[in-house]
Length: 248
Image (tube, rainbow, N blue to C red; front, side, top):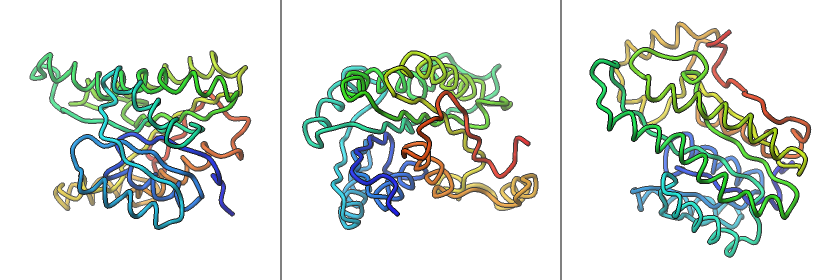
């Protein structure tokens, strides 16, 4: 059963990792996918082809979600190319980890801009279309770090906690128009980025998780499918931890 048949989704930061996983699973469920990427043109072209091969309409856009103007233009382009915007997945994000005493102002500002302001930019950009349609699902990618904090990640934790507060407020503002706003907080998800970590460190992390494994991009994508679909029609303003029980 294809849960997203006929829906158009925008997914930011989808050329690799979790974003790529979400795009692929959305396409498998029948969604047409507009996705953004920042630099990796080759990876974006490969993903676009893969999604089209799944039988859906798909297009990659080189766009910086941290830019208000680029976000506005992206929403206009997607509406023109696809005809509707039913789902927004704000997934684009970066890290610039350091202890607070060593963190420069620039590293704090940049993470807030890319991770948090991009969510404001993109939500503003799709709001008018969703209000006209009187329906829409906004899914914002936070992190377990945004829920519980993490040493060496004050900037990242602040950005991801901010996303939760922002999403709850949007849920309250737009609920009467049948527009839902929810958050997914992934735990330790194994991607290209984590593959570079020391194997013993990774083993230690897995051991501390009740399910005894790291998550996959598909684990996060499946939760996104649920929140994007009509199966979650009465769910808004919630944070779903996809973390193998890490925060239990």
